[in-house]
Every structure is written in structure tokens, then in C-alpha cells.
Amino acid sequence: MDYIIEVKDLTKEFGGVHALKGISTQVETGEVVVVIGPSGSGKSTFLRCLNYLEVPTTGVIRFQGEPIIPNSNLQRIRSEMGMVFQRFHLFPHMKVMDNVTLGPLRSLGQNKAEASQRALELLAKVGLSDKAQSYPDQLSGGQQQRVAIARALAMRPKVMLFDEPTSALDPEMIGEVLEVMKALAKEGMTMVVVTHEMGFAKEVGDRVLFMDEGLLVEENTPAALFGNPENPRTQSFLSKIL
Amino acid sequence: MDFRWDLVWQSMPLLLEGAWLTIRLTSVSVFFGILIGTAAGMARIAKGPQRYAAAAYIDFMRGTPLLVQIFLIYYGIPPLIDRPIPAYLAALLALSLNSGAYVAEIVRAGIQSIDKGQREAAQSLGLSTWDTMRFVILPQAFRRIVPPLGNEFIALLKDSSLVSVIALEELVRKAQIIIGRTFRPFELWLAVAIVFLIMTISISRLVNAVEKRLKVVE
Ligand SMILES: Nc1ncnc2c1ncn2[C@@H]1O[C@H](COP(=O)(O)OP(=O)(O)O)[C@@H](O)[C@H]1O
Ligand SMILES: [Mg+2]
Image (cartoon, rainbow over all chains, first blue to last red; front, side, top):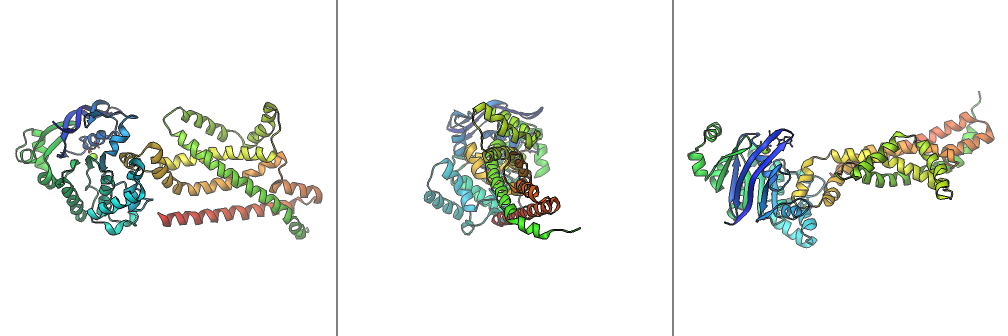
């Protein structure tokens, strides 16, 4: 099997809090995996362990077959995994253009012309060609999140990680961000998406993981998991949100 | 009681000469203080052993009187290295090292005030720890530390009068010399106070202007 990410027996403890209690799963190349579950169930921690923003307490993360090792291959592997945060985390002191080119310039060693060219293409793709010279605080939340997606894509990542990318947005801006994500999925980008947007999960998800209390309780295709959940905890969660 | 304004005016050229030395000494010291303080502030929150060295330096400089530090350098070190240290150099060393410790705490607080999401976003782009500091954390931290840095500049300007004890003819030392000739302490110390006030108010204004400018850029 061509797995891009393999997670084996992953646990994470925060000073006595067991956020993840042993998770194993894989992500195939080209797959869109959606992670759902109640607040505090460990979804963000799981996603953040994938690129070692949280260092796992135990367990192994493999990226393209290679176990992640800090101070060894971590920096390179991070540059191959794009990450989009709930609260955008754009660099407020830089123009949109500089936000998007920083990674390619510093991590990939691209030259300025090359990086700017690519940034303009990506900004066009997320519908923000006219905002290259703006500062992040001059943009709406939806626009900021689209810039954040362009910033991650500028690294030409092999996989994109999204942590509730629309949860901090006003309702009228959720659609524009989901559209960009759907387009990415259709192009074949490998994606792991933590979200409460069940419509998105059904439309573009290949597989849905349901997490609860630090465990991966159930995983299945969207049709099966939403239509016919097996675990009582999944049933109870879905009955509350659908 | 007669107040001799004429004496104040007559003393001004000498006092301003002293004030010019005060400003030079303070500016150069703050400049080095910022360099030292940035390094020490970053070391203070690093994970390696350098944090202990930084903490020891900061605690020593903040926990001992500047006067003692000046004496230590001007009188204490020369016998060890078997050669005198010029007063200006000794003053510069003492003030820079002292200022560096205060700046270190300002820089540390500035760095720690930046949302940790900024560091995470930079690292998720594959930036090294140093690039993350240089391009993402420090530029934002510097905007926040301009006001406390201005306060540090003003504090050091006032404290720099202590180097008069090693016969460096800055503002206070000049006044002492003039008083030795004229026996008019009230006029002279008042004049010194006014010159200090003009300097500190100007610095405050300057810092405010810089701050405004940075806000616009942000
Ligand atoms: N940095 C942290 N320090 C301490 N506890 C944390 C930290 N991050 C997450 N947790 C805890 O881990 C659990 C899982 O959190 P999280 O992964 O954020 O859940 P979710 O994203 O599903 O809402 C929660 O109990 C949370 O309080
Ligand atoms: Mg979360």
C-alpha cells in the first residue's frame, strides 16, 4: 500500500491529561481523511502530532515510510506537510505576498522571482490576486484563511493538514474557504481535515475518523459512518450534530 | 536671595559639552546593550545550557549596584590584566553590560508575548529555529519592546551620571568642576537638572514617534 502517513500506537500526555490513548491509522496518497469528534476528544492533538508540533509521548509517525525524528529529518518533513490553523496565524508584520513567499525563500531556497511568481499563481487560485500587497489585518477572516492556505501550498506539500479551518469564521465566510478546500481535494491533494462541516466530509471525504476521549472509535467511508454508525458513541455524537 | 542667571548661561557651553558626552555614552551603551540584551534574552529562554549563563549574567547585573560594576571594571580589572583601562572604555563597558541585562528581560518578555501560533506557523513551513526567530518572532517582538526600550534608554541616561566618579567629564562631572570654581551649587545643579529634563523629554518624544510609525506599518 502506498501510505503517505502511518501512525502507530500514538499517545500524548499533557501533565497527567491523556489526550491521545493509542492511535493507529494510515493515510493513503491522494486520500481525503476527515476527523470528527466532540470538543476535547484529541483531534487537534492528533493532527499536531503528525508534524510534531506536539511531540508524541509514545508511538511512531512515519512520513513516506520514514519515521519522523526531531533534529534529524523533522524540518524537511515539515516543509513537505502544509498546515492550516483554526486561527490562521498569518504573520501580521508581513504583506500577504511575503507571508506566502517566506517558506519557499527560506526553506526551499527558491529565488525571489520564482517564489513571487508562484505566490501570485496561488493567490489567484484562492481568489485573492488583488490582495498581494495588503497586510493580514486588512483582510476578512475568510480572506486570511485563504491566504493561509496559499502560504501552505507555496511549499508544494505532499499532504495538507487542516485544523478546524472554518471554526473561527463568520458563517458567511465559511463557504469561500470550503470551496478552496474542495477544489484542492478534486485536484488530488492528500488532506487530513479536522472539521465540524459534515457537508464537506460527505462531499469530498474518502474516509471519516471519529475520535472520542483520545481514542479512534470508528473509521469508515462517509456514507457508511454517517448512514450506519456502528459504535454507540458515534451514534450518540452524530445524533447530536446532524 | 539673588539668583545668578548669568552664571547659568555662562556655564551652558561647558554643561552642554558634558551633556554631549552623556548622550554619546548612553547611546553607544544602549546600542551595545540591545545587541547583548537580544542575545541574552534569547539565551534566557533557550533550552540548552546557555540559559543558565544568561540567567547568571542578568541576575548579577540587576542585583548589584551600577556603581560597584563601574568600580569593578575601572579599578578591579586593570591589576588582573596588568594595564589600565581608559575611563571612557570602562564606562562604556559598565553601562553596556548593565543595560544589556535590563534589555535582556525586555526582549525575553517581548518574545514570550508573541502568540505561540506564530512560531508554529513558521515551523510548519519548515523554517529553522533561527529563521523563525529572525523573520517571524523578533520583528514582532521589537515592535512591542520599543516603549520599554525607550524607558531603558532614559533610565540609563540618568544612571550614566554615575560615571562621573571615574572622572569622566559628562554632565554631572562638568557641573562639579564649575561649582568648584564658582561656589554656586544651586544655579548649577538646577541647570544640570534642566538639561537632563530636556534630554529625557526629547527621547520620550522620539520613542513615541517611532512607536507611531511602527503602528502604521503594522
Ligand atoms: N498544550 C496542552 N496542555 C495541556 N492540555 C492540553 C494541551 N493541548 C490539549 N490539551 C488537552 O488534551 C485534550 C485534547 O485536546 P484537543 O486535542 O485540543 O481536542 P480537540 O481538538 O478534539 O478539541 C483536552 O483535554 C485538552 O484540554
Ligand atoms: Mg481542536
